[in-house]
Length: 214
View (cartoon, rainbow, N blue to C red):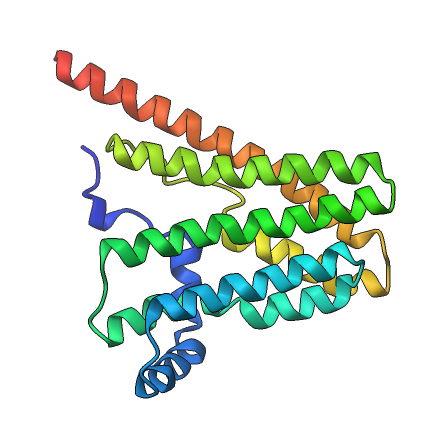
């Protein structure tokens, strides 16, 4: 017997939102008093990530990491603000998901430009693989959800990717290869996570097929 959807184990991202609610919820309450809308916060987060990408492209890795660390809570703040304003909607969730994808792609574009301006074929390759992996992780989950199949698994989802990337950028000032190492870790394990989800969906699809034939 399968677990009801509401009883399934929470993801690491879900737990992170619970653990750090004490931090971002008061800020969201303050923004609510100012009358700021959730989608505005989402777009500010996207703009901040574009700034990080520009810093990466220019080789200012440490400052990019610091800015990304500051902008990180914005990802949870827009949802908290939507709940405070009673404005939770499918459109808001859609905008949030799309801007999340754009944010990551801009970051990896920053790496791609940096490694093209400072010729590094390895960096270019792993920037592409990291971008591909990050998109596939999200796409597989979205496609599975649309088909009502289970893809709730994954070693390196978006939050974990940021946990790898931010220290790699910040401490690259002490050891420059750290930024590339973080990128390589993301490239390898994001694609591994996409495969994890593909196999989970395959297993769930065959399970449901066998149940329908009983």
